[in-house]
Structure formats: structure tokens, C-alpha cells
Amino acid sequence: MIKKFFEINKKLTNFLFYIFLISIFSTFFVKANDDLEKSYKNFVKETNDIRSQLNSLSIDNSSNFVVIDNAIKQMDVVVEFAQQNFRNKNLEITEKTLNFVDKSLVDINNSVPKEFVNDLSVIDMSKLQDKEIEEIFQVSADMKKNKKDKLASLVKDMTDVDKEGLNLFEVSKNINDSGIKTLNIKDIAKAVVDNPSIKSEVIESAEKGISPEELAKQLAEAEKLGIAESTQKVSEAAKASGFTKDIMPSLETMKSDFFDAEAHNTAMQEMAADIEAGGLGEGMGAAEAAATYSESDRDAQKAKSEADCTGNCAGDTESGQ
Amino acid sequence: MKIKIFIIFLGLWILLPSKLFSESASPLTVEEEIKLLGIFSEPIKYPDGMLKFFGTNCKTFTCRANKATKEMSLTFKRSKVYHQRKPGQQLYALAMFELFYLNQLKLKEKKVKEFIKSWPEKNKNGKEVVSLIKLNKSREKMRKSLGMDLNTGIEEAIERYWIMGDFLQKGEIKKEKISKDMKKREKLISKYKKAVNNFNTALKNKHYEDLYNKIEKK
Image (cartoon, rainbow over all chains, first blue to last red; front, side):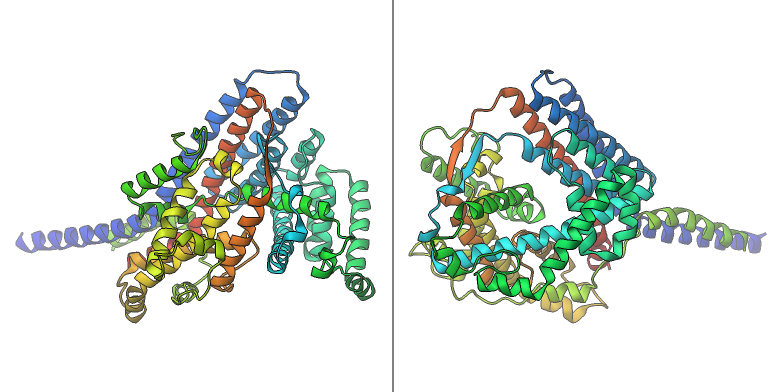
């Protein structure tokens, strides 16, 4: 009887020990997922709120409103697809779909007229120092390269999403057709020519959503352009005339009377919009920095900034104070 | 025997779905991430505008870094309207973020060294190391927006941010009349964008969560 009792007791102790181990491990793995689940729930709640607010906006026959509202409606389908994939635990496709939504929303937002516009055409380029000019054009060239890489990655993502059942090339075409400038057939062709390894799968997906004839035409154009860009002769000729391969003017060209400052100011404006769209300042770094910043520091800074601000300061801070 | 099989089954039942759910390879190892943090070295030169901001009484690195951190924090909290009216401020704040990071690196240098010494047997100062890695990720993201990376020198990065800030400040801010309905739409699109961005960031950060857990909870 006592022996049996000890045996049962030993088994029970073993059982409890294993349960204890499992609960420790499971807590370790589940914690990160809990955070993600929480983010997902917030995301669903926020997007539902936004949709209902958008639907309640007054409907006007103004073409501007119709264009924007239609483009946003296109996004709803894509967001729903991303949510469905998250629920199915397909995180990779969720992320790729959201990358597309992000880019499209940036483009929709850019099409909305802005209250404040920074007119860079007033800048007298000849008054800038050499170092400044060099840096500005270096940034422009680097950003151009970034944009190219991002585009290639997005087009590849769109192809992967198509394999899971949503043709984003078609969505993109619909947004363009509604009047918003976003990823178009020319961009897709350029991305394909720059990355031949993705060519066949992109063409296969893109052709389902856009006209195959138009795509073929744009591909031929982009290929011609690609060949021309890499031709040594053209490069040398460009260099001789003061232009680099990326049509970035040299310092000497910019100082000459022939320099088209207006064209470059337009490019800079585009860059400024890119910076704004990138949401710089948001994110972890800002949050962590804010954590080290005391209330009294904030009060002092606020007082200083209000003193600096002539006239009406309302709306300068998030609180509107 | 039956109990053991039951427990193994129970364990798999609990662990497998969550493991599958969190399946994403961390791109870099702990050692590689620490290497990317860099080593503290005080900047030799600053842009003129930044020196003007520091003032004549603030000459030590600590004073400059603290002043820059306060200003940066305030700028990041500003509204969208403020940044539209003063487009260069955000870029100045990014230059200041570089000093903030460098100061954090200086303050936690000893702790990072202790961590390296004890790793992988122990995770001494794991929390501080994770906090620095997260900051470094933000720094990388911000630099990338202007075509730089973590290999770009600190003076060069600060100078680039400052020059671009000056350039944007030189433009003329023009106010256009926008209808109320259009403003509402703009606000909602921004909200939509933010919601998508937050969730997408959480998804992307998930790739690093395993690494952070490894460092903090060893």
C-alpha cells in the first residue's frame, strides 16, 4: 500500500515538473505573439473606425473627392486580404500586402492638395556653397537609388501576393485609372528590366491585371533605355557635357548659366515629399528619446517655442497648445 | 510511459503553433548586432548652424548631447502642420538624434563591454544592450531615408542632415485654401497610413523579437 502510494506520488511529481517546464517555455514563445495579436486587434479596430468615418463624409460631386474616395475603397479590399492572411498565420503575405497598401496610401495622400506648400523654386542656387550643392545632389542620387531598390522589392512582393489570390497589379491599375498617380505599367517594366531574375514571374502576374500588349510595349521601351544607360559612349558623352550617368549635374554645370535650376528644384520638392511620406521622426527612437525627457524639460521647451512663435501658435503641438 | 507520451504530446500541442507563428529567422546574430552599435568617439566638427544652436556656454560633449536630445524630443512631438510650416526642423532633429545615440553609447559603453564578456554564458545588462540595438535600428532607418547607412561617419551624417534641413528651410512656405471636406479626407488618410504603418512595423519587428528575447531572457 505504502509502496503504491510512493509510486503514485513520484508519477504525480514528475507530471507536475513537466507541466511546470512546458508552461515556462510556452510563456517564452507566446509573449511575442501576444504583442502581435494586440497590434492586430488595434489595427482592425482603427481601420474599421477610419472606414466608417470615411463613409460618413459628405458626398459631393466634386471630381477631386470622387477620385480620392474611390482610391481608398480600392485599399479596403487589400487591407481585408491582409487581415485574412494574418488570421491564417501567413505573416509573410500579410507583410507584403501591407507594403503595397503603405505605398498606395502615400500616393493617395500625395494627390490630396496641401494647405502648406514649400516652394523651393525661390532658392537662388548660385548662392549656395559648393559643399551644400555637392551634398544636396549626393542625397538626390542616393535617394534615387533607394527608390529603385524599393520599387523592385515592391513589384516582387506583388507577384508573391498574386500567387496567394489577390492581383495587386490590377488594384494598382484601378487606382491609376481613377486619377491617382501610383505604381504604373512603366514603373513595373523598369523594375523588371533592372532585375531580370524576376522577369518571368512578374510578367505572368502583371498580365492578369493589366494589358499584356501594353506591358510588352513598355518592357521594350525600358529595355532600350537600360541598354542606352549602360552604353559607355553615352556615359562618356554625358560626362563630357557636365552630366553624370544619373543626369546629375556636376558642380561646374550647376554654376553655369545653362543649368536648369527649375528642373532640379522640382526634383528636390519631390524628395522633400518623399521625406515627409517616410514619416521620419516617428517610431521607436523618438519614443525612447521622449522617455528620457522630463516634464519640466518639456514645459521649458514649450514656453520657449511659444515665445518664438509670433502670432497664432495653435496647432503647433500635438495637443494644439 | 503513457504519461510521458501524453506530456510530450501536450508540450508539442502547446509549443508547436506558437513556434510556427513566430517563425522568422533573425537576420543577424547577437554578436553581429553588437558590432553594429559602433564605438563611442566624440565628433570633431559640427555644422555652423548646430554650433550656433549649442551656444557659447555649451562646449562639452555631454552638454551638447543633452541640449540636442531635448530639442530633438520636442521636434519629434510637433504636429504635422508645424513640420509643413518649418520643413527643415525635422532634419535638424535627425542630426540631433545622432548625438543622442552617441551619448547613449557613451553612457552604456561599460555595460556593453560587460555584456560581451559574459555572453553567451550569461546575459549581464541584457536590457541595456537591447535598448541600444533598438535605437541603432531607428538610426539606421533614419539614415536610410537620406541614402546613408551605418557605415557613414557621424560627422558626415550630421552634416548631411543639417545641410538638407537648411535647404528645405530656404524654400517659401505658401498657404493654399483647402476645403473642410478635403482636410477631413487628408486627416483620415494620414490616420489610415499610420494604422497600416504601425501594424506593419510590428510585423517587421517580429523578426527581431526572438533576438531581443534571447538577449534579455537568457
